[in-house]
Image (cartoon, rainbow, N blue to C red; front, side, top):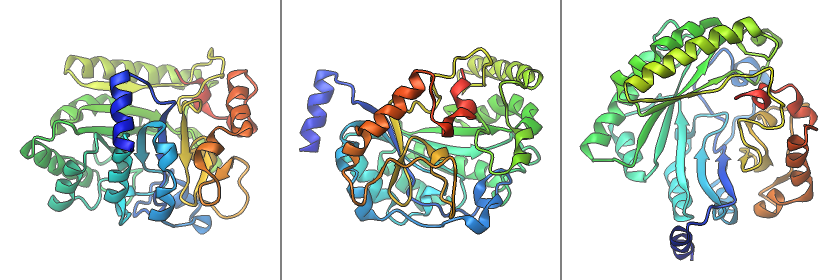
Length: 333
C-alpha cells in the first residue's frame, strides 16, 4: 500500500504534512568531541541502540514525512540495522539522509551506502585542517577527508548521481576564522554542499565562549563577515554553502529546527521537538521535553496531540516553552 500511496502523492503534487522525522538510532560514539555532552557528561551518558521493532512502529509517521534523518547524539553507522532502517524509510516514500563522523569507512561500507538509496550523507567537521578541527578529539581530520574521498570514489564508479555528500560544519567561536578555508576544502573533496551551524547546546557553562549569543554583537559581526565571504567564494566555485547566525532583531517566534514541521525520536522512543530537548542523560534535565513514546503510544497521535500543538503554537505566538527561551536557534536568520 505504501508504494501506491506514494505514487498518488507524486502524481498529485501533494506535500506531506511533516518535513522531517529525525531518528536517533544509537547514542554510541567513538568520538570525544570537547563540546559534546557525550564527553563532558560521560558519567550520566546512556549508550543504547533503538531496536528494529521500535523503528517499525514509526511507519504511520513516516508515511506523513518527506524525509527521515537517521542521526541523533551518536554515530548512526554503528547501528547493525542501519541499512534495514534506511530501506523501510524509503519504502514509506521518504528521502533518507544521515550525518556521520567518518570513522570506520571502508570500501564495503561505501558500496552499501551508495546502493542504499540514501540521498544525503553529511560528514561532521569543526575546522578545515587538523589544527582547527582539533575539537573533534578521537576523529582525526585526515580520517574524515579519507572517508569522503573513498565514498566519492565508489559513488562515481557506481554512477550514484542520487547521492550528495555534504559537510556538517560546526563553527566554534574560538576557531571561527577556519571557515574561510571551507570552500577550497569542499572543492578538493568534491563536496556538493555545506551547512554551517553554531553551538546552541551548552552542556557546561564554559562552552558559552564558543557559542554565539544575540548580545555578542562584536563576535557576531566578525562571524557574519567571515561566513558571507565564504559563501561568496563557494558560490563562485559553484558550491552551496548555507549558514545562519543569531540576529538581535529577530522576534524569536521561529526556530531553525522548524518544530512546526519536524520532530525528533530519541533512542528510547521518546518524541520531542529537537535533539536539544532529549539528550540521553540519566537524572534530571530541565530542557527535556518528551510528549510521548513510540513504545506504548501511536506516534502520529502523539505528534497531533493537543499538548504538542500547544507547544508549537506558543512558540509562534511569542510565548516559547522554558526549554526554548535561551536557545539561540530561535533568533537565527
